[in-house]
Amino acid sequence: MNTGNEAAPSSADRTHETTHRDRESEVMAQGKTNEYGVQTTNRRIFSWSEVDRFSWYDGGFEGQILSGENMHLIRATYPPGTPYAMHSHPYEQFSLLLSGRLRLTVGDESREIGPGDGWYAPSDAPHGGEVLGDEPAVFIDVYSPATRWIVDEFSEARPVGSASSSDPVGA
Image (cartoon, rainbow, N blue to C red; front, top):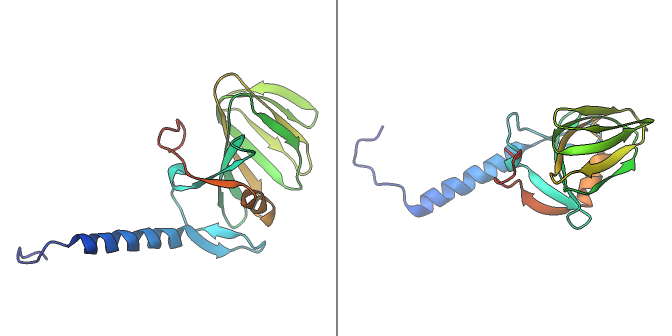
């Protein structure tokens, strides 16, 4: 209870409180290690602006990742004209395009997709495409199970900070 006789907190006290809260938030973001050796998140509600961004191929595309006990959630951003290289992996992937347009191939099926469209790549199915138009393609990937494979891919990327507030779908 404030009786009016207490001194206002000093700037050093406020800095200590902020630093403590920042450290506490960082620790809370780290969860336990799952059966595949992946550090899971403790975040239950988040904004992409709070999640570190990583870049591959000198800014060719960016990604953000959160890992749970059994799945990874990834937000990928590909600039206009960037290829989404054909690839495959031994893990299932569901994806949802948030913005932009892609010419997409999954297995033997190819088509142009836009915001709200998605795809499913079963284990070992080749998939990829190209960004169409002048707008970046931003999509969400969900991989299962949550293994070291995708985490190792992120460890090869260059950290570029957290999502910017100018990002139209960032927060």
